[in-house]
Amino acid sequence: MTSPASAPSSSRVLICDDQELIRMGLRMVIDSQPDLTVVGEAADGDAAITGVAALEPDLVLMDVRMPGLDGLAATEHLCAQPHGPRILVVTTFDLDEYAYAALRAGANGFLVKDAPAEEILVTVRAVLRGEVMVAPSLTRRLVERFVLQSPTSVPAQRSRLAALTDREREVLALVARGLANREIADRLFVGETTVKTHLGRILTKLGLRDRIHAVIFAYESGLIQAGD
Image (cartoon, rainbow, N blue to C red; front, side):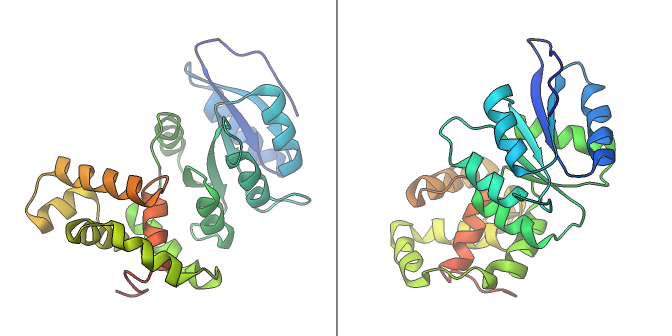
């Protein structure tokens, strides 16, 4: 783990990956920006947890397949902390089997390692702003591929749907089918702001963190089925 000094105005980033070349490449991209600074590196989940406690980064770029404590377990641990950093999952494949579990555990975004530098920076800054960076279509692909591998209490989830209005259920179903807010607005003949309002109420009523978890809930509750 390393910890070079950072400018006070920079967002602090910790890179966790077991491959040194990957860490080096990500460091070069991040440190090339005046508003971003790599404050540390970690080669496994245990080192990431230790690094977060010592360095207090704003964001962790978290690999998932690592020896020892993997990125999924580390993500679960860090997301359980009351004031933990935001987590951006960085994987080799666009449908890594661990990515769904990491997002379900509370990660804030999903990035493929071979993404262009510009895309990496856009994603990093968006996650730092509080956005969830997973394309709606990719979220659906992740959920459809892995939701059946994660046993849940469907009846208990289904009962929570009673808290939603008919229109809110309709919006949730469209979100789960991979439609963006603009597409949902066009489908329902309402404004995009109205869709955002409905989604905000859905998240509040169901106690969900973000759009990703709304999609997961829609599948686990049986509101929609894989392939719908």
